[in-house]
Amino acid sequence: MAVPPSLLHSSAVFLVAFLSYTAAAFDVTTTPFDQGFTTLYGESNILRSTHDDSVRLHLNQFSGSGFRSSDLYSHGFFSAKIKLPSDYTAGIVVAFYTTNADVFEKTHDELDFEFLGNVKGKPWRFQTNMYGNGSTSRGREERYLLWFDPSKEFHRYSILWTNQTIIFYIDDVPIREMIRNDAMGGDFPQKPMGLYATIWDASDWATSGGRYKVNYKYAPFVAHFTDLVLRGCAADPLQELVPGACDDHRDLEGADFANVTPKQRRAMKRFRQKHMYYSYCYDSVRYAVPPPECVIDAAERQQFKETGRLKFEKRHHRRGKRSSRSDVFERSNYGSNQDQD
Image (cartoon, rainbow, N blue to C red; front, top):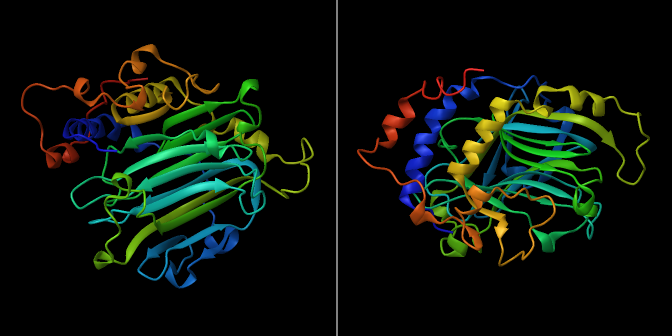
């Protein structure tokens, strides 16, 4: 899925609007690796820090690597600061997600951040997705660009999952919210899930539909994870959770990350207007009737083709001199006058 220069320019400009906003941080407690996580695969490609507060996942020509939480959680807030590989990253996927596929092979639930590598000089892209009760035939992908270079510095990526709401965050900016309704039925994740992080070779699809493959001349590819957060109710996936048995459910509802402020909602709207370049909700070829959780914005709908892809030629038109990428990345105060509350 090609991304035009006009959208890349808009991404750089959008960085400025967010820098002053993202200074705040959620009130969270981090979890040392040995207290909450275990190796998933590629143990020789996993490097843990001396203080056990960060992990490096390597991909080379022999193997990728990954880790997972030791427990599954009935609901929760799952978060990490992540820095992605740099240079040529085509064909690579770095995933940060929750799932229970190891337990419920045919009826699994899943919530995804998937970062998609690119050729040298082109930016990382990423997608979010949700599956409930094995609904893999009804994918709910959205694809976006970032407003910063994720290989240069750490940013926090978070998934909030409650009984009624799913929110994906970057730093403290909500980028996607899904609210449960009766029409969704089992498509809303309800069974306990664990947190996973992986890096792997997805040459067959990740970059331009598989046109560009992983080039191991640039290996090893390293994804850094630090300040990991597991905040939820650990649960046995095969046993029914007794209502009221876990205080973490109430703690989640009162936490700062569970209550989106008006300022955050404006930030989310700006992000989606400027950075989302595919949405399943607007893909009428795939879904003649939008899935029940979709909230259709009439103005936003006009920006997308019937395939759910952005009408590039009609969006982000700019006149006058454009700022260089380096100029934009050096600014830090834009947006401070846009939201004063």
